Length: 277
Image 1 (cartoon, one colour):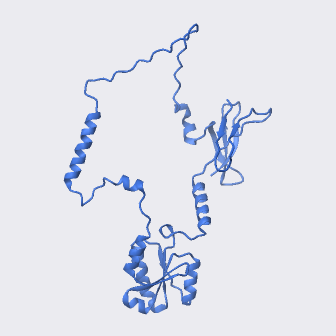
Image 2 (image 1 turned 30 degrees about the vertical axis):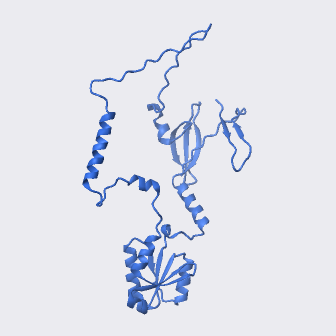
Image 3 (image 1 turned 135 degrees about the vertical axis):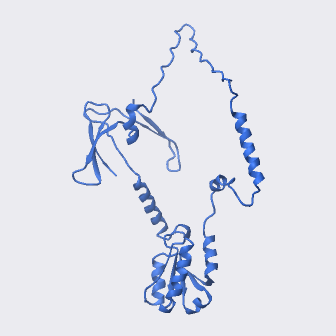
């Protein structure tokens, strides 16, 4: 049976297009394609995202959120303590252990696309401060480390509506226990109202045969169709093939990323196809 697909008008095309499958020419066979895209789809998505953002990820999804840059070796201990404080809070951060000049350290951090660059010296260490900069070379001034942590927490995006709806009835220490008891009673009453009474059977509606047309023969009842997921389709389901079954599979002789597979689609001979992971 030949297939037909209609493509409706959209922003790319102002005309409706109908694709119709044609009969195979003599000597030609219908192609069979096995496409596996498990990790490939994720890789393509990440490639498009990196290209679109030019590597400048927003703070909440960045793999490089904060880097602590000490002015000299005298501030190494304090820089490491600030790094560990932020890392303990769950942020992706690091600290610069190199002995280069301060301007070079800051420039390297900007090129590495760190969202926040935290500069600290002996003066900042005395009061628990860091000098906050961003990768666009904007200087935000000195800030206490705990105040900086609060600012970073505000960078987190708001929860989605699906998230808030799902956890709407989650337990909370602010909700009295009587409220949960009332809710449980309501759910039990609703379940009892829907449950059928014991010993009572629901009447089954009888299907009437289709009425015959005037002057015509009575219409025959349609034969029951076989279930889609039968035992003989077990291989069909596992392989997610819509046209046949894989009967044999072996590694391609020229590549360890390709496979040779034999597929039966109801013809006299199996077809041999190549597939990749």
